[in-house]
Amino acid sequence: MKATDCNHFIVPIKNGNAQAFKEMFDIMHPQLTRHLYKLTHEPELCEELVNDIFVSFWNNRTTIEINTSLRAYLYKAATNKAYDYYRKKERQPAIDHLEVGSNIASAGSNAQEKLNYNEMEHKVMSCVEKLPERCRLVFSLSRFSQYPRKRIAEELNISIKTIENQMTKALKLMKKCVFDTNDRGHT
Image (cartoon, rainbow, N blue to C red; front, side):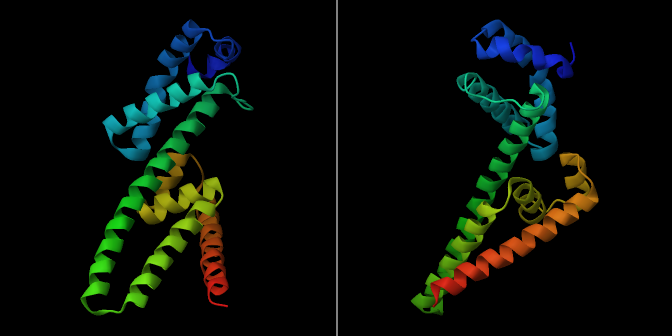
């Protein structure tokens, strides 16, 4: 059975049919693992994320609304999990960077500079969180993971032009968010 034939599992799973869930799991697990591997390149992480997706799916089966196909829903969930992974992964280096900045600030700069640095770092991360989902994913893959646009296009199955449009939108929104927030804080 192909993954595209999974829609017939939706109603039985929503009704708590564990066998239907197992059959759907057996079909989709390898495909979602491959999809996540393209995004993360970490086999153990892929396995963990896919398992999280299926546990969440089963736990929320009665309230999940699937407006497309089950396959598309699960791929979207996998992409979102990958995005969450990148966001969390990038926060740690940002924290490490803050520690380096803190050491520099304490070595000779005044406390106000250190505070300004920490505030700006927080504002930037806050603004990234406010980006629309697709925009945020493209921006994170480009800026944080340093993926070239061609690779992002291949992994997300979208055109280079869409990548360019999303990056333009992200940069405009980031600039507005960072500077509008900054201006309000100093009036």
